[in-house]
Image 1 (cartoon, rainbow, N blue to C red):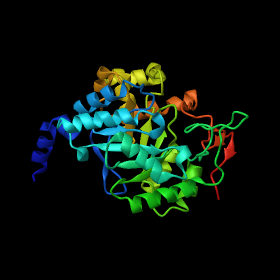
Image 2 (image 1 turned 180 degrees about the horizontal axis):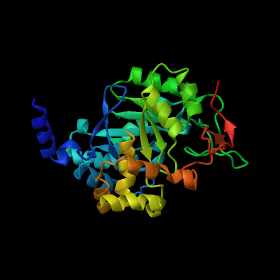
Image 3 (image 1 turned 45 degrees about the horizontal axis):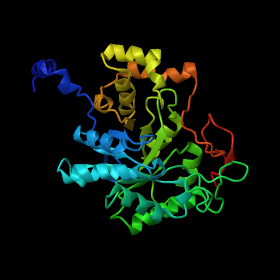
Length: 338
């Protein structure tokens, strides 16, 4: 083609075609050959009675990625929502990407944990099943989810390592490929992931981590990228109360693009090639969170400078009493294993 004509065509092409805005359901490839939608609805801390309406509204509004967990204690309501939208023909099951997670008291009972979630979610399979934390807890303690010792500390199960748990998940997907399509981890640091990979037969498809400009966790993001492990970000707004909304850098980028701070903070992850979970039970916010934009190098530099001036701030860190390898949380017992 004549260079002059090519240049004319390039100039005449709308910017929306040359630089399309990211879509909430942009399919991001996993190492399994499957894909995961860029934006998901988070269900953590969604109160009973609110979850079903939120999930129904989200799916009716176009969401196809729903993140769940046994520990959230609301998978039954999510299941009712899934049953509702599928029965009404809004979606088919295969249109959705459903994640659930193996809780800490089920590390020795992976198959049982999976089946409990499948029963509550009213689905024959999950697209992704994650080890929620690399912290095994007593399956027969004084509480089904959060067992404690007499001194008030968490009742840790020392009979199994997180590597053993991963081997249980490997067996699970090998023996029940009809019930779980991919396995992964959550809340894994570099130290724990390296020790898991040294013994793994199957590479995790995903590592779901707290991630936002005050907790970028670049070291684990880089390791996951090197190993072909996709990163899904949770608490992208800085957890409850959206504290990052008031950050000056976030506000500047939002003003530049004439969008709200939530759009900037969610789009930050797509620029890092991560998927992201936005949690809300408010219909208007669920709708607003669908809007995503392309951030340029200057935007990302501004956002990535936030933690350099204000320090790391990790909002989600359960009181396990365990050192899970995060550089900013060095206290606790090391369970990373050999």
